[in-house]
Amino acid sequence: MIEIPKSIAEVTSNWLGEVLKADIDRIEPTQIGQGIGLMGDIYQVNITYRKAGMASPASVVVKLPSSFEENRQQGIALGMFEAEIRFYDELAPAVSAGLPDIYFTQILPGTADFVIVMEDLSHLTMVNQSDGMSFEQALSAVKVLAGIHAVWWDKVQLPALEWIPSMIGPRIEYVDQLLEQICPVFEAGFGKYLPAGGLELYRQFAGNYLRINTELAGRSPWTVAHQDYRVENMLFGQDAGQVVVIDWQGIGRGPGAYDLAYLLGGSMDIDLRRAHEKELVHAYHAQLTHAGVYGYTIAQAWDDYCFAHLQGGLATSMVTGGTMDLSNERGLALVVTMAQRHITAALDHSGMERLAGIT
Image (tube, rainbow, N blue to C red):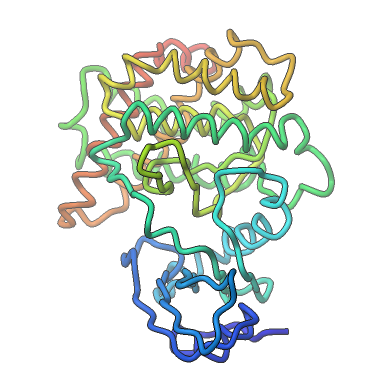
């Protein structure tokens, strides 16, 4: 068994050569995506070979546990490190497109000791979430999402997949309780940025997150959901037709509409989302059908999508905004954008009325 490096200093030419089964002369690691909000430290590693083969990559990305102990402990408690490793090892081979190539994974169960060596995608384009996706990028992203969802559509309530957290399970119960606690802090920091009716809906939402998730989960087919399906977890080709989705630590079993609403509600400009969301939901549904999903009508897909704007987008905005350092200007601007977009999408789709109907 190849040992798990404790830090990037232990990612040596010999270690990486053993992983890639190649004769490596030297490597040059550079940290990318720095930030204490990450669950992992990520490095781009350029490689010089003594003898390169046809399939020898010029560079790879190495993901190690976060340098911040608080993040490591949170990742252990939520099972996020093991979930991502198991996703790549057990689930990803069934997906035909939209995922990075994985060269190596290893984890010591129950700890933060893990490593992932994957394809370097730095030739692709990342989109700033505050800027938002174009329509073309959104169209590609929803088609890839449907392709991934279709693999496990209505098939995840099996013993072999019980390791994937339920989207109405303990993790959601914890968030539900947290939202009530931090609502006053979120309101003080971000209430002034919200549209008319937005603060009232956030107040009603806090403490009802589990009830909302349970309502949708009881009537909509389940699949494997990414649960952080936003534009900064994607990379795009030059023509926007290619999409690769990363960061699978937070996967869950539940309705696919969660991911769809989270993406369009938070990663698109409000006016652009309003202009194209029906077309994009139709594209998602058409791709599901093309992949062999039947019995799920476009009317149900649209209603699930509308309802799901009461889910992850609102919760993520509140948790991030209610716990962040408001002196972080970039982070503040991003949370303002997320909160405005997600609450506007919920209001656009009768969020107050939908919430009142289940509380």
